[in-house]
Length: 629
Image (cartoon, rainbow, N blue to C red):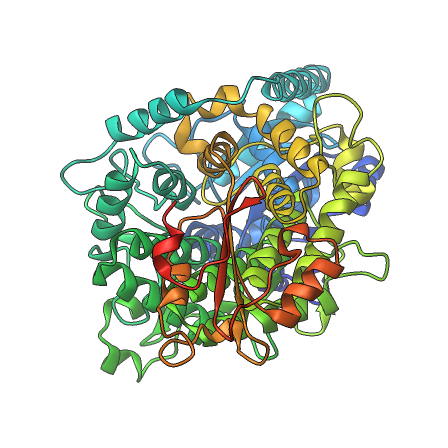
């Protein structure tokens, strides 16, 4: 039996390399093998820090007898959902035709053409609680394939057709919501608030960071956001030692978390807590932001730049692999234990979220070291994850690069993060790189063909998924972090605010019109999109602060270099874009076509601010009183 996973980039795949299951990685070869043998494909989709993925691996995939049956009757394919998010999204949609209990591990049975005909999640090794065992599921599926093939193929075709119709319906164009409709969406979230313990709904309970970002963007939503963030900060969802947040809690009171800690959650929550401090000046928000940043920089940051994707929920203690026990120990006891493993792969989009959050939080809270870390991560991504033609790769592990294609999420989140880094540091380089990435997605073939998508991934995304007919042109759904559509539209809107080029604004609006109808009625699933729609509905307020040459914009000096406290006011200003540059930096931005900086200079050797509304700017100011919106 060939070991096809031993050299995989993905730690999740490598963890299964020594299973008796004859695993194939995601790719055309696996489906070709299924056609050659005339057997169905079993897709097992998970990720390295997934608790129930570990459980199913120990119970079923390590069982030689079960593996022999699996190998004989199927082509088993192991997929890391973080390496191939578009594959995961496509088969999650397909799985919804068979079960309401979606999650990971995701277990999908498909034809050799890739069409799903049965799916579930975790299956136990023995029947329990009305749930069939994994062996029983294998027998039933293989029996249907061998004895009722025509019905299986027909059912698979119907599922594929239904998904295609649903995808088309999901991208129906609507007018963008106005102020009253956005506040109505806030009202829906307020109605879902758990007034006893905070958060939304009962259990399981997630941090839903994009939703908090939307609430923070709306005056009517800020009290709800502040209550939620404070209760989360004081809850068992937050690790009191390392400061990071766990992925979700299994109980309504935020207790009994699933202990994996994800880069995307913590990046977005860093931004949310920094914004909460910006709005309230309350110590709990600042302390929590500092704790999250300490986790990002102390646990997930990789040597040479970049951030790992997650830290595991399980660790080995007293010879046994247990979930959460490490995190239940105080700091002194943890120091004597091996920490849970870190999934060290570097994901382009998630790193973009971290870069943007660190840069923006550094500006708000005056933390220069965070900008340094964001710069190092950006440099690594632009050097290692960007091909000579400007297109992106999605994943690296050390010096090794995955063959997985970058998604719209990667292009959008990295572009948005690079723009935040430029604004906070005064360095035009990341903004130029961000503009190049957005332009690639705007200029891709088909990007302007019809109303369905103003953006498209260069090259068209995953070719194997496209061959199955399950690929969607744009996936508008979001939950734990912004969709590729929301991230890219947000980056395009920021570019408009910096350049004045209307093509960016049009693209952002066209993108959001695809989800406007769904978003206002189901705000828990479209937080980032609603936050951007709030920006699009409001007047565009822009603020540029220019320091004399030689001052460090990234350090945000106070005291003698800022005698009037102007920069302190700039840091906490609520403008849609806030830029801190020095005189040469402003000239460099102008030379690169960022028209907001044209004519912006410091005056009389003092930091000088320009407050603008839709590119019409007030007189230059050197005192904070002139910055009131």
